Image (cartoon, rainbow, N blue to C red; front, side, top):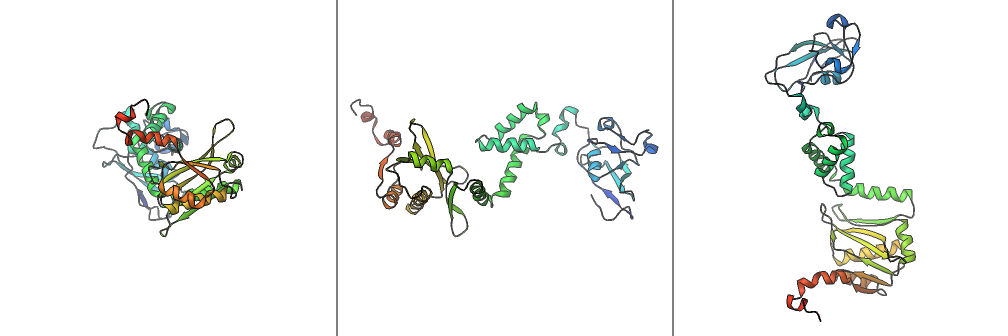
Length: 330
């Protein structure tokens, strides 16, 4: 739309809006022009009302909502009057195409948008590792139909993609800022991180107050599993787990590492000791990782190191021939 003047000059404002929907809000109308007795009416009454020269609107948004064309020659021209109202000055009503059927009207691009409800559901699902397609199906069921959701699956996928692209250069900063907010809420929350020469986050460790309390009571044995890898950033997720007096697993802390090099593991265990007030576990259980073994020997020299039996048994089929593996005595 062009808007080059002020209200005194009453310059024309024209915009080829997309769509053909009627105004969904109350708009003011000149009764002398349209022959109505009131000064306003509801949108439902306007669904069958054609544009008439002289109809007034409060804002350009109201104009857009009132009339949206589909890319053909049909259009309306509005002027801004001295009373700060937009008035239809001229129009072309004829369309060069057929209209969309009412049951497909919600699929028009001009009528689709990702609502706050859809946005909230999308991110709640992604936090639970539920994909966009499943999130859209959830919206379909909870809202009562695709036409009520307000957008298509492709719209939701594009929205999430665009948002990811927008924050991709600030996601690490956002993550660290979130850790800092947790520390402000509870000073017992601990975290530490490291960035490389390019400013990329390569190491981060955190443990909340409950993790540190669990370790102070059940810190004799700690299990460290570095076999997890996140999908998006290809960073290694390293959780620290203990066992309480009910033989239940308790969370002791976690870290993200960019690689499994010895220096990364040395930083990890040094930071873990810092979080746990310098108290080392009596026994630590890990997977078979040479760099982790070297780091434990360097940082935790008095801690007994053992390999995880579950990981060993998982590798047996790869390392042992079937004839030996199926032997009962073996």
